[in-house]
Image 1 (cartoon, rainbow, N blue to C red):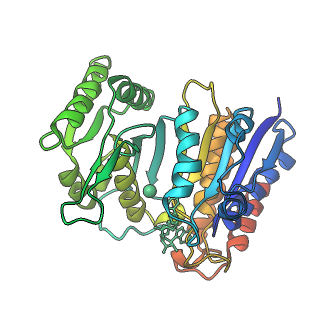
Image 2: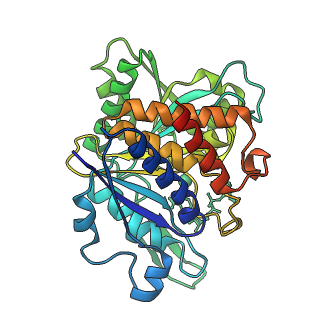
Length: 353
Ligand code: NAI
Ligand code: MG
């Protein structure tokens, strides 16, 4: 049972951090003969777009569909419009492969300072709805270039879409003895879509008697992230709210260089995708200055999804050791190591376990 992984390095720092993610996966396969790996790389990035006028071949999704998982770096390049990689590659994968759960761990590793003075360690999960919501391409613009110009962007919330996300989050809560789920909302102002959102979350909550659901308005919730981040365990949020909360959460626990994510298709009928929360970081690209830990941590989430919790734990332990010892950290964590040096040190730690 070989694990077939599609590797999409992308643009900017994507290929730099991906090289370290791949290095770690190869080290695991070398060290453990029961873990077989077949990685296939696809150069579907902005260069590809400039050459072919599209982000991936016409049968790109059909090709990806046959893999067990997708390991993704980051996309974005100043030479092409910002929305192209998102709407022609990332969104088609998330939506067509029913990756409706975007799981974003906000976890403070030992030794990482939070910019806040918190009472305890920060450790929670944001479950972001990943297939609908505010990130819809429905809408349009009227009276362009005129003083009366109008733009309308529709949000799509479906009962089924919210319920399946909520069910996944409540299942996680039950498995981990979490007794409260916080629901990020704004139904006081956005009455139709967020109204249905709240009702759908509550309908699922009713199936989990021991778990309380607490509605939190997104504006107040943002403040609570800063005031008492250690109090959260599980948060369910819409596509836009979850996007913002997880970047804010990342900033609380060491920044984007330490923030992984999983785009999950819980039914397993399509591959899931694992990627750092960060983008292509053109400001530091090509300098071996990017932190590869978010990418490597995403590999750990992928291993867990592939049924190798043991290997995922090995990777996490190696990351924790490297972060705690603070000897080979990249500039975002106040170190002076280069991207590959952090990757090498993590591999060394893996071999020592
Ligand atoms: P970004 O995440 O690329 O960078 C934001 C800031 O964080 C920059 O100062 C960057 O240097 C720093 N940073 C990010 N990752 C880092 C790492 N691993 N190590 C150290 N520092 C790191 O977000 P930004 O600048 O808003 O967007 C840049 C491009 O990336 C844009 O084209 C954007 O559309 C794209 N993007 C792509 C995403 C994806 O592929 N899923 C997600 C977010 C943005
Ligand atoms: Mg984001």
